[in-house]
Length: 80
Image 1: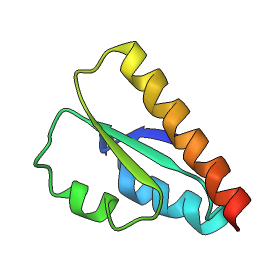
Image 2: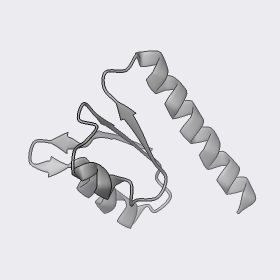
Image 3: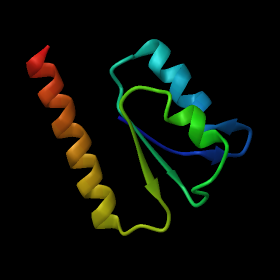
């Protein structure tokens, strides 16, 4: 699992995710951002297994999202 911000100094979250997905295609990604209308979101959602969380969020919300993504990944592995 990759958890990354959409906007980072020197690199974008979607570009980072694409590079990781090239090496490990089954890696689920949680993008976080305080900018719900950022142009990079379009690139982010073209990638497989992507979830978006709008900042600010509570730690419990992050934990629940991680659990949900991991559980969905298990279901896909069983179905494959």
